[in-house]
Amino acid sequence: MVDDGVDVFNPGGNELQLTLSGPPEEFRITDFHYDGVEVTLTWESVPGARYSVLFSTDLTEFEADVVDSFPAAEDADETTYTFPITDVGVDVEEVYFQVARNAPEN
Image (cartoon, rainbow, N blue to C red; front, top):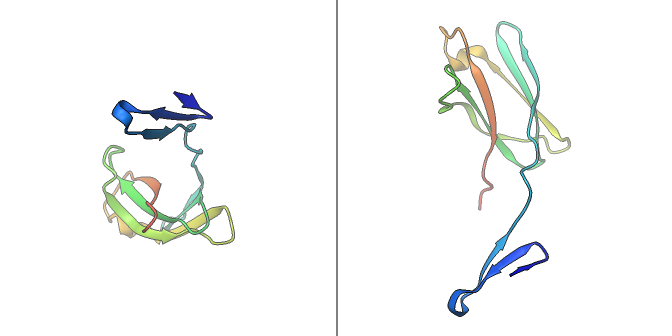
């Protein structure tokens, strides 16, 4: 049975409720700057959230992190993080960055 966007399944008297929603909000890195020494990334963020900045040298594995719990700006909808390029290694010819929102802490 579907009622007001909520699907309720009732097998044998036990009720399971599934709430359906649309796709996640778009998330974007809005600015990138590299001056030969430091990298600056700016991304859309949610005040109070925490983010990880990950990097990869092959665009496949994003297992290494530059920072694993950076706080979002409290008074803006974008957050900026600057770090030395040496945080990703000294002999890197290509590097790719990914920003991920951390799960809320309970």
